[in-house]
Length: 209
Image (tube, rainbow, N blue to C red; front, side, top):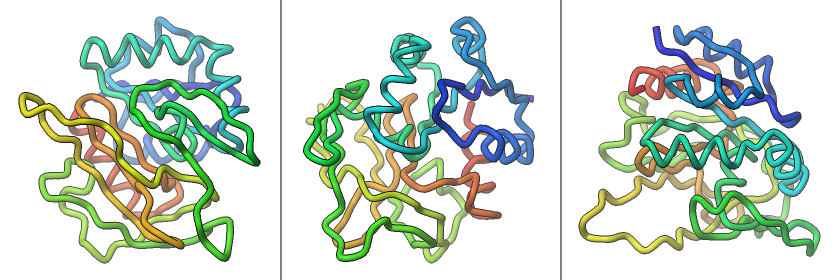
C-alpha cells in the first residue's frame, strides 16, 4: 500500500481529499509535520480560497521547502485546485500580486469569462501518454470551482528533458486544467469531488508512486 501525506496548512478540503484517497487504496496521513511529509511515497497539496492566503498558510508550515525537497529528490507531489495554482511563480487577484512557490514559471490570473466562478462539471483535453488520465474517456467531466487559472504555459522545454504533459479546459478561453511535469503533477479541478472520474485519476496517480 502506498503512503500519501495530505499536507495540512490550513487551506484545503482535507476531509474529502482523504476520503477520496482512502477509496483508491492509499495509506493516508493528514499532517503538517515535515518529516512525515518528506517520508511518504506521495505528497498531496490541496487548496481552496485565495492564492495569497494559501501561500501564507503554506509558508507557515514550511510547505514550500517540503515541496522543493521532495521534487529535488524526484519524490512525487500532487497539487489540487489552489494547490496547483501556488506551484506557479505568482498569482494576481483583485490587482494584488502574490508570490507562489515558483516550481513553474507563469502567472495565475482571472479567467476572461462572463460568468464567474467557473463552477460545475467540464470536459478536459488531455494529451497522449498522460499518466493521470490513462484509461479515462475523452468526454469525461470533472468538477471545477474557481475564478482564476494559469492560461499560458511559459516554461522553456529542453530537448534533453521530457516535455511536460499539459491538459487544457475552456471557460471564457483556454486554461490549464492539469500539468504532469516529472515528479510534480497538479489539477485545477477537484478530483476528490469528481466522483468515479476523480477516483480513477487519483488511482492512476497513487499507482504511479
